[in-house]
Image (cartoon, rainbow, N blue to C red; front, side):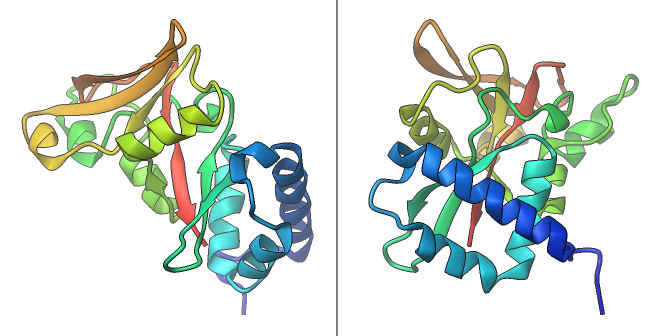
Length: 187
């Protein structure tokens, strides 16, 4: 019986084709990783395929960036050049969304990531992604914010300007047309 988190065979085949093509076109992102390893992990985990499908559909262009040596998990990260189009104009989390009195955004980064079964990038994951290419040169992306900062009403986001990666702070309830979020997913 199909569930809301299933994808059709046609979607599955299309997603695997897209992921493989992206994997092969961007080999420097995952040196030493074989596609057969990635495909085997993907084919044995339908829930993660659904999450990758959601990441792809919202403009994330997920690609393999690493394999966890201790668990064997393949790590995917959104590698779209700019913050994914389908995930912009959102505040940081539910508390920030509820704190807005007017002009509320449609959702929050934290909730949308969770709904996709993925996680917001940490600051270190975001910086690692930026070592693999130039991302967010005209947009910015929310990143996972430490609880002590969030408790004070703030949230963190990153971007690349002037050939430098910056991580900044903003009120968690803020949102902008050019700010979205990136996800990571372990398969």
